[in-house]
Length: 424
Image (cartoon, rainbow, N blue to C red; front, side):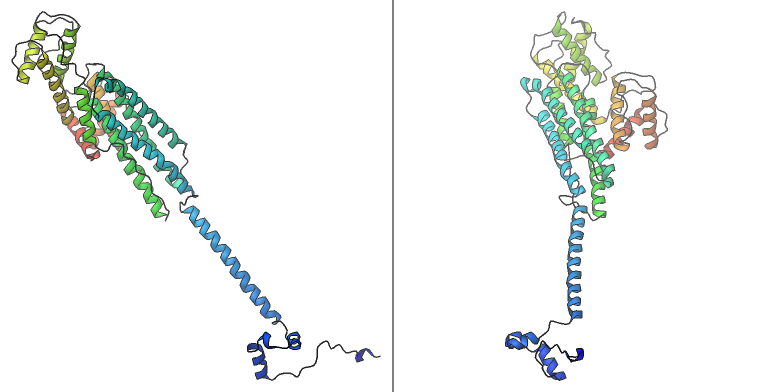
């Protein structure tokens, strides 16, 4: 048989359909209505249609995967729970909260009812707050902020360092005051409270506010945590005054008069000297030699006159109480006036007045130049103190002489009042 005669016909013959019939077959016939033979005759859609459908399905799948990836990337970049910003802020928040709690504890420790036993335990409580703040500083130093928040992290550290120094200063000053030191501690403690207030200003204005601006400008989620150490500055200062007033000496003791001798006389002379210094009395300082002589009697009578007590020169309970009240009031007045009536200071001077000036200058420096190295409060008016004084005078529109006079003291008081608004 010839090759041309072979014929392969696997399907039964079917008459070709007209155009209308083709359309009906393609769009209207339901496979369930066809006979078994007809099902064999129906072919799958043409290859171009299959390819097109597969391409559309593949493109849709790829688009879905890309959308999922985009959502994940945006979520991580926006500070979500697993993003760098969210991770940093979640670690920073407990540090900020712990430091704020330390401030509340300080106010409670100084503002509570002061008894003999509570005063003895005050130093230990302050030590605990110092250790708590050291821990906060250490934890903050261990954090690695996103690059865009590196500057704000540094400012937050400056704020915590100020809190640590303020607490250490308060602890040392209170301990010495309660031990009966003859120094005038209220101006020093007030300056240390200013340090704590400055730490709040730095946290808010140099860390929190710019950090929130960075987050918002980049469309990122999260808020830099708040941390206020001093909730009420006036209340804290009042607590300190009350504490110091209670440390001025006991209202009980033997009656002292001309000719008395001993340790009780020495203690009375030291307390009288404190009052004479705070009131800028024209009477000279007494020699605390334990002998109640004419000078001690004259100073006692001057105190009694000022307090409205009969000036008999005898030291009894009412006179002792009058001295404590007078010292407390004088310290309060000195703190409120900013010590603007104190004598001038200049290069080469030394003493507690210089220490007080250096402490107040440090508060101003921390508010205006937080990255600058603070002065060493050693009571010596050296070149660094002179330079800082001249910087203050220039900033306040005064001639930069480097000499601390009344105008310079008033300028510093005004600057601190402007930079450290009252909090409540």
